[in-house]
Image 1 (cartoon, one colour):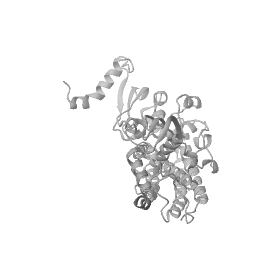
Image 2 (cartoon, rainbow, N blue to C red):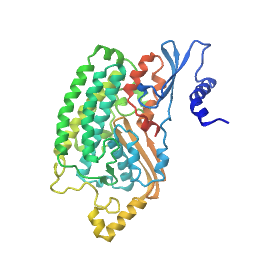
Image 3 (cartoon, rainbow, N blue to C red):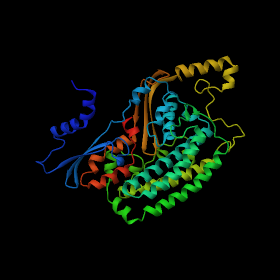
Image 4 (spheres, rainbow, N blue to C red):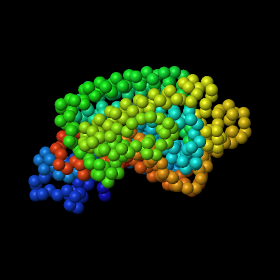
Length: 425
């Protein structure tokens, strides 16, 4: 009988043997070699494992092996109320938890038919959260991409700005990493005093950092040689594989859900959709750099148009006025029997969602993060499916890695910019 230790240490070898036996990897009478890249290789950005078949330095076949971070999030959702599942969305794309919170909340609100009833101030706050999260995720993506290729200085530059962002997130949500800020029907709390001014200060500083990063990389001979014409994804291939986000737009497809299917207040904001022309690693880098500038532009507009202003002296609501959906204020709970009953029902049973099924796609930093919810009524979903952009984007690796050299794998993985938390779910 196999012990736990046997299973743990022999599984990768058994998987490779199974692949070889099935003909997925052929030894070609000793002319080719099979290598394991990951799941602990630093440039795999998590627990991704790739089985590489090599002919000398050239890759002839690549097989991604995922699932090392699988936690069963979709099954967990079936045993929790809609509100209780919000913290689990932080653990999907944990580089942009605020955006994942909003995506999930919008899906539930679409199911309940209240997505169009969100107060204007709530919509603008959510958009700011999503765009700041996009800047944070792209800063990390570009920084780690550059570090993998050898440009360590860029990593220091981008992480300096991310630290400022985490200070803003902490002031807003009370947490730096796992925010859980969004609620069904609104947000957990209004903006803290002085937060708007801090955001304006950050926006003015981060554009300088973006310019410096481009000065270090965009015309750098080593960077250009390592990224240009490496990992080319054609427009047709990107569409066929269902890519989304910056990886799709870098291939020349001008598709962005914020424009194609506007939600929240995006229809009232002005911004451009950057696209590439070649679809190589260099284009994917350029698209993300421009997306950060567009996010800065969007947040500036949100601050200027924010209903109620920075201090909200007019008392603009940040939650829908429905005691059966949003938790009542503490003073009402302590003084009103009806409010106390509403809180008890919401906490123990959750919001009473109608019978039906919905899908909502959200433009996350990595691509389209979608939630499919099948409801049979009550406070918990009957079934939930998460459309993880990193999972879909990684599916193209077997098509684009062959023909490249071993050193190009690091470049291509960095340019795809995935996160295994949402890939494995």
